[in-house]
Amino acid sequence: MTDDKRKYSSVIVDGVEQAPSRAMLRAVGFEQEDFTKPQVGIASTWSMVTPCNMHINKLAEASALGADQSGSKSVIFNTITVSDGISMGTPGMRYSLISREVIADSIETVVGGQGFDGLVALGGCDKNMPGCLMAIARLNRPAIFVYGGSIRPGKNRTDVISVFEAVGRHSEGKISDIELLQIESEAIPGAGSCGGMYTANTMASAIEAMGMSLPNSSAQDAISASKLEDSRAAGEAVSNLINLGIKPRDILTKQALENAITVVIALGGSTNAVLHLLAIAHEAEVDLSMDDFERIGKRTPVLADLKPSGNYLMSELTEIGGIVPLMRTLLEKGLLEGKQMTVTGKTLEENLSGVDEYSQDQKIIKTFDNPYKKDSHLRMMYGNLAPEGAVAKISGKEGTLFEGFAKVYDSEETAMKGIMNNEIKEGDVLVIRYEGPKGGPGMREMLSPTSAIMGKGLGDKVAFLTDGRFSGGTHGFVVGHITPEAYEGGPIGVIKTGDPITIDAEKNQINLNVAEEEISTRLKGWVRPNLPKEKGALGKYRTLVSSASKGAVTT
Image 1: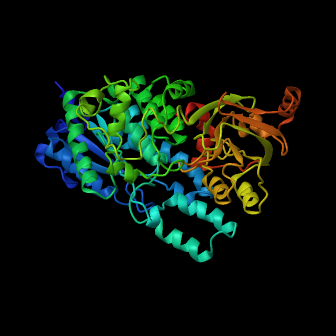
Image 2 (image 1 turned 90 degrees about the vertical axis):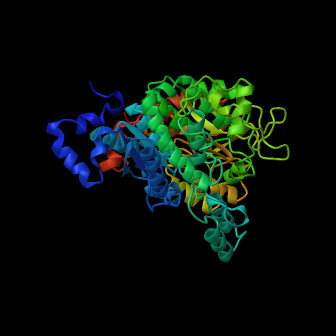
Image 3 (image 1 turned 30 degrees about the horizontal axis):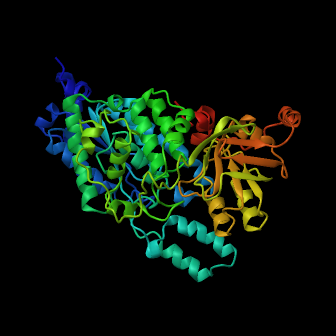
């Protein structure tokens, strides 16, 4: 009878007929006794493409050691990463969201092809994390995720967003060439993911909240003894999951995803969490929609004073205990489901038992009596501009109502030129379209234009609409993920410069204040622009990708 712990590897290595397979595995380091052990794939996103991932090879080796020490046989393999921060504002950014799908597909391919019984997946940059979790949910074999960890701040508490905003300040003459060079040279001191509650730290926190990484895995510096130990312990934990027969879909329930949403809101996390959690739910075959974000958002306050809307960095949250004390508080308030299974083999409430509260003198996490915001900053918006929904990030600093007049651009590049040429004025609603999943293709992040606007001092004076998406580092009065996208004939495609627009974050509505008969006439007369035909990955993506309201998935 086949050993359940070796359900997949036994097919590869057992029996006389598999002697050729064993011969090849001996060449990569297998010993005779290894053929009787569960095989654990260690999916590493290491590369020198980005500082987010440049150290992950060492973490992968630590995970492999942990798996080997606990009775499994580890096999390290690589998948890809691309850097949002490096490609931002360029055509290369079209590949960013696509990389999420490539990562998921490549991990599935290797794990399925090699017959691994378990999986440790390690990620650093933004799309690594949802890509890894999508593969984990799809494969449904004992698995755990390891976050590569957050970067330490640069000089004067700077980070990558500081550089983007410095570009806008430079264009206004507020800083010199030398000052810009100094910020550029000092903002990113080494390895680790971008340091605020941007998309990487948002998704790492979400994954911990849903129980797919070890406690406090999301709140460790990239270069630290604690991150190395976390990685080793993850290898040990996946062996335990194999022994216990606990699979990802035992953990990735509707309640687990709701826990993740709750923590994302409490931390003031990225709008990209909506897109990625919908995609993970899709792979786990869990019914999750934008309406769930709205429902949970009504009961969940924003408690964290973290960048980009707040003042502190992830490394500073790490110093006061990470997100575990916050999760304990949310559990005590009845906002988390504590009976959820986790990768420790214990429930969430068991993991949180005995966790100390934050010290009384810390200033990063607010109390329920004095929240940063009484309800969610992530607003699911509908209206005649977004009949299938849109996602806004409204911290409250900007107000909750914006009425202005459209300034329309059909690409990020033309919008950026307009911003730098001072075409955008107070009261404008900057519209960037044909940047959706199909239109881009690739749904680029609009960090360069939003940061330039911030740098010009217009952050609270200008609103921003797009069928693309925003970086986790974006702040201001911004609405993205507008669906249907312009490429599919959505209403955003027929906005004209000068049209009045209202964004209401209390009613969660986004409307074009033009007669419905006029909008209908425009839509009937709309013709898709003659955009360049795409080949390769971009062409496949445009053909296969779903709406942003469904997670922009390709399966």
